[in-house]
Image (cartoon, rainbow, N blue to C red):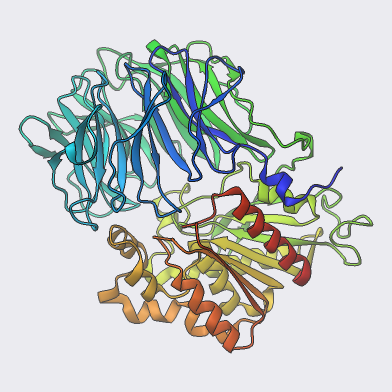
Length: 616
């Protein structure tokens, strides 16, 4: 097995975010060949791709017009998440800034069926709330029409089949939403989902006749299921049960009634492809299940007449590419050919799904990946990273969110460390999504530190694993995962050989005070409020127990981070240094919440690798 440097691994490409052109002959997708995601197009499967945008900043999405040879894409600046919307004329290549309001966020809401208008939400009027706008395809800037003034986090879910109404979602937290219908002519805003407590109403799509909405919800259950909501009676009927797992979402072609919905089974995707009955909206016919590589799929876009769909697929050992699925037959084919930088795909390592019993008996799932020559017996071959040690070192990589989930998808960083002889463990501690509402709520507010205790249980399990060296366990995490790193290092200092905090929270009070105005209420719903829970937030903030850190710490951050401001990094580094902790800091002036530019990613992960090699 060859060895490759981090630059080589970070040059493994990903193709995703597929959108099928109006005639079905073209596909747009995002690919990071230039170092940041840009828009590319293909004329046919596996043909030579054409790059269509050439920016130093990341493109966040692209969506073809349903009628014209043009698409809209989104792009922010320096990771500040204040995305602007642009139109790309696919024939001339001309690009027009449609919004041109760089201080505001713009959240795409989709094209009208005739391609003459599009909808979006934006916080132009008040940074803390999102309003609904409709804009003509050839209008720019302030020519957009404000059609509804919001009072929170609004997202447009799509146009009704006759383009007279918009489906609008309001989020109170990641586990509590409402749905509304906005009548464009009258401005009437009808509440569809009155409820008590936390209930999710997500992935909503108009039924073909416009008389109902398909969605996924956990109303009355612990996990998400597929349901139909009748707009006249507001009755909710179950269409498909997740059978103990979440139905992640549905993609629906509202002209044919054909659909794809996905179940999340222990992190793996199971797709159901079918067609709804014209007479009974809860009845449907299913087609053969597609056989896609990798195990994790999403991002569905329908072709003309819904004869096929394009979707992205990935896996531990499968870099992300766009595939097509013939709806009626289930036959699949690869559309894009994102390269693996000359690294043989057969050298990529597969993970194993494991379950760890935590302090209170809760089973915590996670994915363990072992490097070559470490498949279960303590000790490694001569020349591996564990040279002179009994067992290999392991990186415990903790996801953010916390309402996120680590799934068996491709990670060039993970494969790089595996190639260097490290094992890699990715836990889904309590609070993670994908395992039901109850599991996701087990870390809410006063139960926050129970999720940190799950990390301790995972480390104890790893220390007993025959392939792992218990003295060389490092933790790494980004965003909320960065908080988990700092909390684990202060709560359980003797477990760690080193820690890496990427854009993490050090102080919940200063984080909530300084995060983007549009995010504060959503985050307080998860962590606790500044008004009611300040004392508790102080008590769990790692900045206040930094003296307990015993292992070397590396802190990385983006200067423009709108979610977790860079002050979180500055204060933990300053306090740790005053306590005599070996600490290193790396700040990127042109990045936000994470690192998207290739040169920055190379610098960041080269530095992380050197840090871990030195201390682990």
